[in-house]
Image (tube, rainbow, N blue to C red; front, top):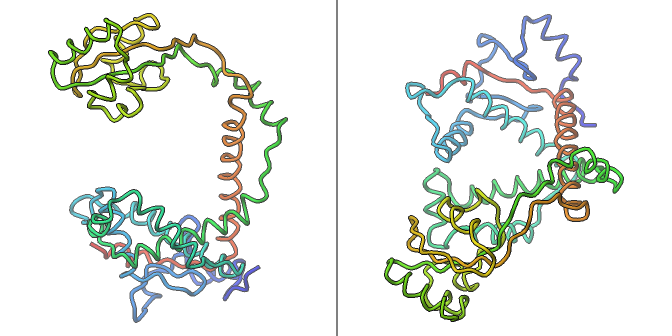
Length: 324
């Protein structure tokens, strides 16, 4: 257990004597009691969260989710307090990782960054970061902190969660209705820019030419490389224009030409799968994941509450309200 500057019980008693009060889990000191040289938003076991650090983080958060940052634009104290609470929790978890002797190696960080960079063309990564007011080095530091917290959660939470086969079977029996699969179809498509071209290709298909080959040659859709294969899907998973056609045709038939916002389509229905209840073996791992995630959230919340109760967390709400 971490040695604290002031034990939680003594903090509570001192608060009552000194006329302090609480906001949720956070100890709040009235404005007249606080005169820091550097304006603070909070401190966690003596480590500060400064107003400047809060402002930078909040502005990035607001930019990313298109939230108003000015009070006049509707940014509420409640939103800012909620965000501050997340920063406090992050600091608390980072301190706990430090106590546990956990660290992120350069190799682990570089591997994570290389993986994330795949989501961005290299020439636009810096531009994406600039849009939310973040520099590359700041982004790397954020990823490092996330990896460290993930390591901590894996050690303290995930490693103690076990979901048995019996629990999976019990869940399946109690929730069979969740595993009913509606009518599904497997279909292929060819998409072109004009109705004339679509009709010409349909005529060739009706004469027996290979659908997959024509799709690879002429289709404008990304699935052209797979011969137009759309995979298996149920109603509502594809655009309505698709559903109105493919679920009405027999297996092996070529559909009429269909127009959508993407162009002019010709489909072939390759398979119809009747409605059924998925077998336990088909959903076993999905159920195991559901149970695991439920326990993970419950355990984590209990553990985080325990960390907060043992920590000295001080908030300066008057400084929060002063931020514009």
